[in-house]
Length: 561
Image (cartoon, rainbow, N blue to C red; front, side, top):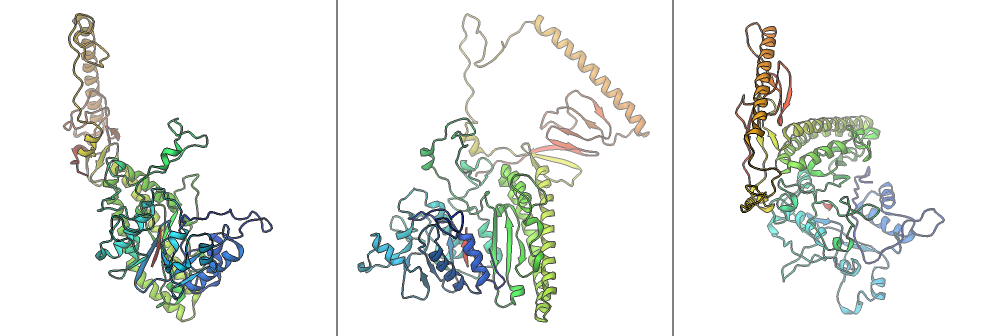
């Protein structure tokens, strides 16, 4: 569950812990825990109309029926205007048993003391993260803490928070750590939270779109290490499990392996019929768009595009796949393609935010008048139309990106009559990194034997006698003359038939033209009238000329993530 009809919303973040447990029992009469986080969330949303009720119900049920093994839990209420982040690690620190802002399991203090993890007589508060978090440091805590730092920094930039912390979030080298929550510098709009979901650390020392890990064009994806079932890598090498334990990349907030993301909005100023809305998306947030779904919009509240498809087979009507193909294509030339994606994101979402107030005003009037079915129909129509528009836009976006960025070129204007193809060449820093500017190997010294005049690595002698190359040259000249004459005759014949005035509209040249050559400079080949051909790296159609230039090289709320 995400949100219920009372506007209670739940998000989930899987965290490492000191105590591992057993999997959920296979049957009601089997041994083991009875409930998992999915079941707990669903039951809480079915029965509760407040967040406190949901927390208490989840806690009580997990203690009664077992959550993995013995359930140990704590909840902390946020202060007004504060934001907190859970990113696959505990963030609640000192627990104050006398504060109404904390509720916790009945065994929280007893187990900590009986296991020697905390001493009630020490005068120190029980630190939940230290006591019940992972007991060892795997050296990869930034996987979680970096995301917490980033979101809190975006919400309260005035605090100038320190990103360099240990696995508990405590600052290193005497610097302050990351707090459980911060007061936002200004009220957050839905779009601010969407931007947090899409964040790639751009503009920070941890920017995933810069550096050798992202390749020459700034691909922010950092793929997961792993091997096949037989323990071998795709390259046929044995997977080194121990070595991989010590390797790590920065972990993005917007991840390619995201199934879905959402921003849940609860508004007590509106009736429940209208107030509860979930802005929903699938795949990596930076590659897709968010659509408003109203939880009280009836059976049609969720558009089909969000509930269809499988990862096993591409399906263009599925939103996940529409966003996925855009994200995957863009990753090849990310630094350039993300600009185009963000333009479409802004256009689509701007339109939704512009029309939302009018739709909600009308729906509110219907709900207050007692016409809940009418309100539901209006909201579901709005959501379904929004989803259809978004999916169509992403279909067009994918075609646009495929046409604009391919084979090392960028088509600057797809509506122009002249195809201006610009080279998407590698930046200088990357060329230096891969040794592009290495000096050529020296020639071998001349000797008295067979190798005289040869260059290292050459497969054939540099020198050849006239008797060996003369016949070849002559035959090539004759073939060239024949092809040119044949091409001209053929072209003249077609021109006479097709255009009495002798105008060659749309004449196409088939064959390989030297890339970057002046217009009209082509290799020997045939002519075709009014056709369309893929010459070099551009598709040329009637009345279209092709030029090529170069792109200059450049140097390079509670939130669950």
